[in-house]
Length: 193
Image (cartoon, rainbow, N blue to C red; front, side, top):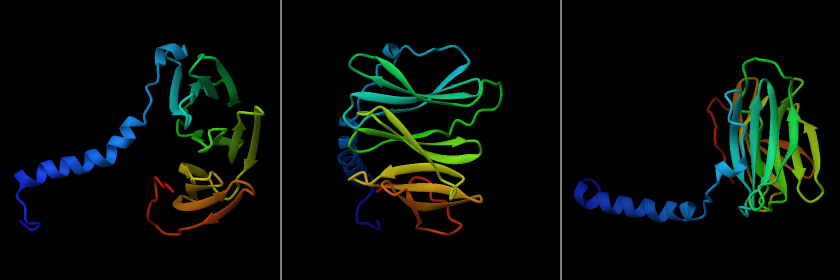
């Protein structure tokens, strides 16, 4: 009775409140026809990070296979696939499934991702119009756990790890400058703009 209602009165109000919040999210989701993607479903392939484009016309995903990593882009109208990135050496070893981390720019024209290469964290983006892949080293960080674009797509907020500590960073896309926002022992795991 601290809030003036008993549990019988509070429960429907609680449910309606969260339905209003999450109904918009549910209506904006798209159904991905996985059977039409023609994935190689043998035991050696692991597929992760299925990320639909903002307009829902394309999907990007990662294929892990015997130490190799590939990023695929699929047109959901024609189901034509193209490999836009590949790294690693075909060798049977423990695979890090957290990298690459995929994120679409809000315009839907760029697919960005963070990946490890030769011991370095790299930020890369694939331009759908020019079909060019650009990649830059990010020596300031060891790993990126999560990221989100600003509404205009000019910046990203990152949950980055440096020397075992998770902090928040702002990455300015045009100049690739990185600004550290926090420096504390708390784990900032899932940032958003």
